[in-house]
View 1 (cartoon, helix red, strand yellow):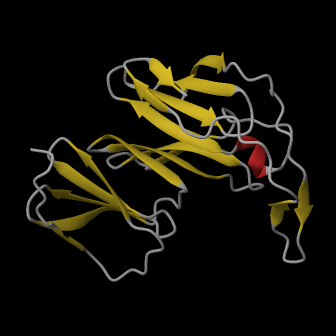
View 2: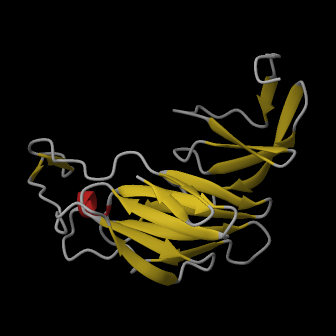
View 3: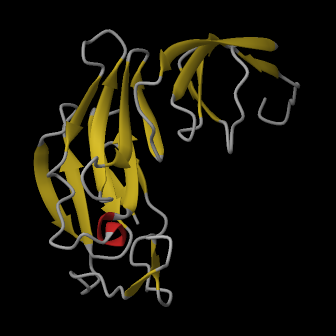
Length: 193
């Protein structure tokens, strides 16, 4: 049952230094990724999981979701500017990365305005992007085309974020902003926020 705990040994291929290697289980496969190292692993569920590389140096990412064994949704930074963008990683395609630079559009070059979390509803086969600092959720198909813009009950539609540019060129919040959508989950087209 759920209380039975068995240790699992996970052995990733290669000699990388990860900041935060995380795993996702989908069907009978385990996927491993960090994002600060542009690598995606896969392996079979067992007491010793040997992860093999299925993507290397295709994309850095801050978030990744397994859509199926060959397709992944990612959130990364745009090459021009530092705004967040959504992308698809297709292990068998050339090029392997397809970015949608406009779906998270913001009038500001401030990446906090597009900060949020990408989720995947396996029952409806749709992606959702939940903005942290405004009352908006995007419903997106697997090709990263917008299906719908959903407003939450909160009234903040424009992020109330003040930033300061540091000497090294990075941008930080000058004071904490109110988080509108912190914790969200999905099931069969229903959003629990």
